[in-house]
Each structure stands twice: as structure tokens, then as C-alpha cells.
Image 1 (cartoon, rainbow, N blue to C red):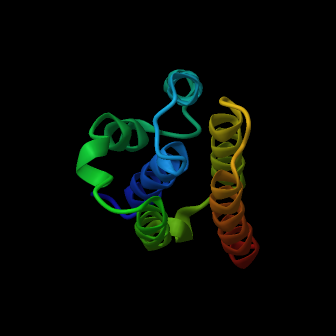
Image 2: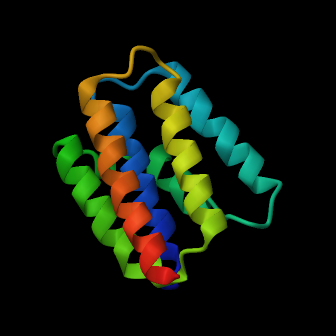
Length: 129
């Protein structure tokens, strides 16, 4: 795995944590993620292949709590975040917000998880500039 791949692998875990934090995998959340994955395949800016692989094999990664999955995802993300670009950060924010918004209402757990990752992402983005 290339160093930059850790960002995508970690983000896959983070998205999975967001999708499962309410205790179920909603079809609308999966469809929202799939739309982003399909769009990314047509673009050369962001490669979400590893995000898709993590999600497809989600049982392998989701054997703990969503909070543990989030922390593991942030750890993996951090391993490659020296390669974080503003375009990638924007894409990650958009995907996460769209996915949790796909199945109303947004629960407190979903909101907390998204806020934690976006706060982390904003800090990493500021550090890169």
C-alpha cells in the first residue's frame, strides 16, 4: 500500500462508522455512497477504490463499535495525511455529510461522528498550509 492509500483506507472506515453508528445500514446511505464512488471513477482527482473495498467487506472492519472504527479510520487516515489536498478534503466532507443526510433524521451519534472527523480534517488541512 502506498502512503497516500492510507487516507482512502482510513476514510473508508470513517464512512463505514458513519453508516453503521445508528445500528443499521440504510439503503439510502449506501446509495448515496455509491453515487459518490461512481462519480469518483469518472474523475481523476480522487481515487475512492479503497473506500469501496472497505465498504464491500464491511463485516471484516466492523467488529467493534462505530467509535472504535472511527478512531481506527482516523489513525489510518493520519498515516497518509501529508498527501491531503484541498480537493480531497472537500470530497471527504461532501461524501460524509451526504451519506449521513441520506436517511433522515440525522441522529446525535451521526452528528457527533461527522463533527469529530470534520474537526480533525480541518486541523490537518490547516497544518498542511
